[in-house]
Image 1 (cartoon, rainbow, N blue to C red):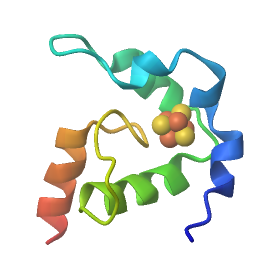
Image 2 (image 1 turned 120 degrees about the horizontal axis):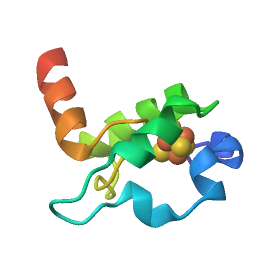
Image 3 (image 1 turned 30 degrees about the vertical axis):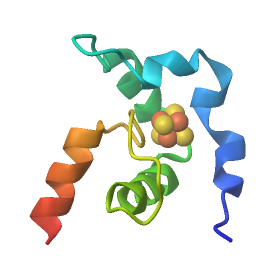
Length: 79
Ligand code: SF4
């Protein structure tokens, strides 16, 4: 079982979660600004990288201040 204790400090738990899942054509800027101030950014980013790589089933939305597309580009660059 993966330890997700870091989510207790996640700033996104305190505001509208829809910001992290913008509809097509809408910006993710507001979510990214909050992520930039989040105390668990690095843990979130690591979890999201694993998720995006297909280890887990959820890959959509902004995680760790990055969109799914940005995470996939980062993973390609790391390969
Ligand atoms: S970095 Fe962003 S998505 Fe991740 S826990 Fe913090 S606010 Fe939520």
